[in-house]
Image 1 (cartoon, helix red, strand yellow):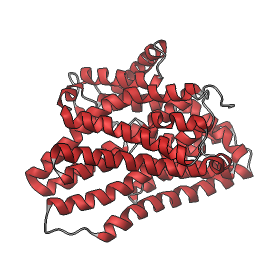
Image 2 (cartoon, rainbow, N blue to C red):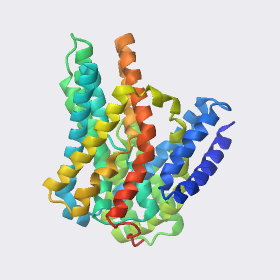
Image 3 (cartoon, one colour):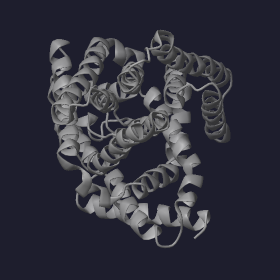
Length: 401
């Protein structure tokens, strides 16, 4: 197979399994993932993994689009109403997941370095699956707005926690090493701050452009696409987060030019589905079912206690901040999925651990296998739980455009 055939089969596979998932009353994104897992098992017999790696650009573009969509849904008037609850929920759901996974991992392995790293990664949540469910069912309301804000800010919190954890893990692995305070404190601040500044500046430029002219259909699609790709490229050069930068871009655009930007988001919704399908199906191809038996006690503990920390922490944050009733009851169910940044951090960890020779590589392999195996489960049940939560909150089909 070549890349063109892989892309075509990915799209057709996604469509077929989306139809099957809808017949089972499950979100389309769950069908994309399952189709990708099956397609991936078949693909290994006809091609090599390099073709999948060559198509990573679709994953990057899809995540950039999703981040832009998340930012575009964050209206200032809604955030003012829900602002305090969003802050409480993000802090507590990331903290509880991190602490629970760290403690349980240490009780099982007695390895503090491994425990700190796994705990920090458990804080991350994948926005992609949540956004796709919201898009599919046209949801709107307090739970939808809170979910979008939380999954967007969640990655920023996870990056901060990870930066501290990996610094102390290095000290534990090399007793004569010392934590670099400048890297530990300022690197995540620079990455997150730079990402938001980049997105904000280009968001203002794009906002001025669309406010000053009555944009055509071609401009409504082409202009934001050009800005999204530009932001993603600049973020990669300066090692910023493309997800956070594009989220800031969408946020500024939708609030600086609220009426004009509606046409832009409507155009992108019509253009983006094939890219999303390719992204999720290709994500599924990376999930190897043969890893499931290797989960073991540690893998299942990571899966269960991460979910428990997310659900309990988010609900507690909503209760303490006096969020709307539907947010208190169902917010945690939307934070189960984990892919994207978590897998990205696992790859970074692998490269870091090479310096610690065999022992470091052994730890890295444990981390990657646990994340890939648990992702198979969370990426299938996560979208189903999001749909259940939004249905119970009575927010399905409430979006006006």
